[in-house]
Length: 180
Image: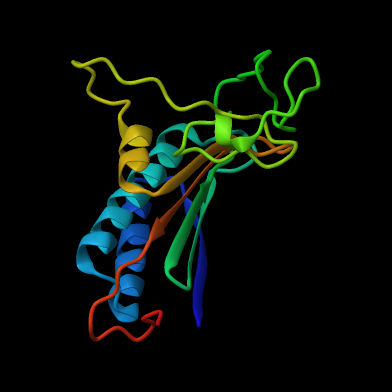
């Protein structure tokens, strides 16, 4: 059995705990280990906070959160309509998986925690670390630390950033969805 949900939320601070509580309620009902649930909730909160802070344009003031539990994996994706991640066209590799010379650049050459961006989506590199005295700028790094696989990319054609991450689930003994 799979559980899937999607929310379209206004870019308001109050939307962040709403998304987090829905995820935590789903995890609790399904029987996911509380520590794993908490880590997913913190990662989701960081992704939503980034969408609220950075994800606006003149067309819309909303963002989308989608979550899916399928088997022993939870996949979460937060998509906004803002300017997206900085343009990162580099001679090393493009989103098609080839470098400037046309040579394939296999995914195994990418950092382990980052999967390649979907075809046509500009690749967004891992975020730079925040300065030690900065009061913000750590959200994407927190997501990287808490999730098993993380992808940062821009939405092709329509603009906006996409932060998606996966986490392998552990189940409580009383779990309704425990994978055998």
